[in-house]
Image (cartoon, rainbow, N blue to C red; front, top):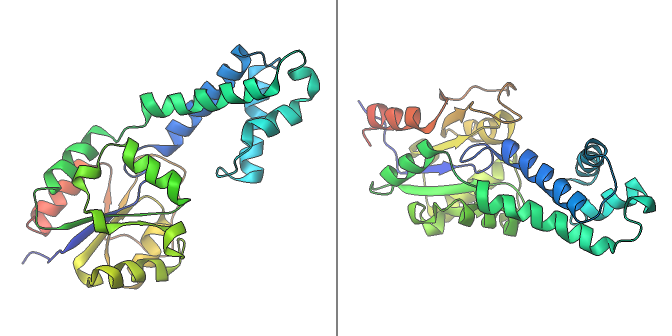
Length: 239
């Protein structure tokens, strides 16, 4: 007998696309752009300082490139307007968004397939609202997502792994957790809190920081890509 499913929700980062690979490339492109704009520093040194700034101030901090110049010292930009070097880094980073911020091919085809089904198709993503919203727009999958089922933790007021986040989603959409599936990569932030309340869970182990990390609970399904997810939806849920 097939399981009943009313809704399927997705994480964004390292689930719909490789955040880890993208961020590394974008940061390298930013440093290269800064060097072309006049930064006097070894590329490896500049990258090391950028990674340290991100680790210390978080990826959501707004002054990464300014801090890199501070750490490299005044000689690194002497004779140049530092604002131009910082702007070059910003442009280099955002230029990578234009060229490389894309969902995996199997994600696109599966979401496209799902869009013709009688299911709520939602997003539950952690992070600053505008940053996560920008990712969703740039990934070009909005047409496949139920507009009322998009939730960013910064807007909701609860962040992962707080189970109240997922409960608020259910309350808002009047859904039963036993008839919902959540797909994510992070075992402690995506899988454990939804397992607590009886969701069906699918953990994707394709790439990213959490591919080899275990949580307190196990997902109902482990998948390598969204083609596996589609087969599960077809066979176990009769989607």
